[in-house]
Amino acid sequence: MSTATETQNVTLSIPKDVLREVKVLAAQRGTSISGLLIQTLRDLVRQQDAYEAAMRRHLAILEHGFDLGTGGNITWSREELHER
Image 1 (cartoon, rainbow, N blue to C red):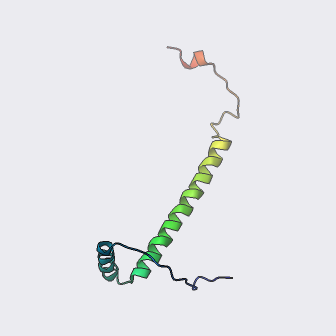
Image 2 (image 1 turned 45 degrees about the horizontal axis):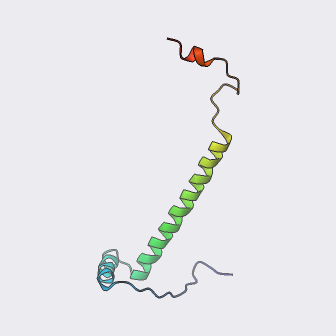
Image 3 (image 1 turned 180 degrees about the horizontal axis):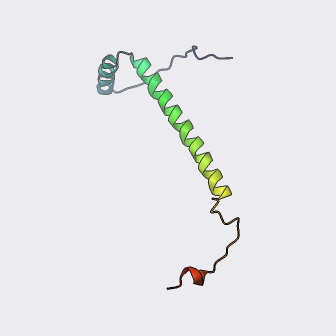
């Protein structure tokens, strides 16, 4: 069973110019490159989770439809709606 405090090392190949900029960015934010990557990856996972939850909610709405207050009974005709 894993806990939130367990970590695993990974190896990344990052272009030197990007690495230089990331080091500066991490220092400006008072964190390390690892800290910056962890936060960015957590944000990415959170966004994906939120997207999937929103998609499920909207698909459920589409499946069940909207209540338009008619109780499913249409009391008008097309001609009545388009009378001039």
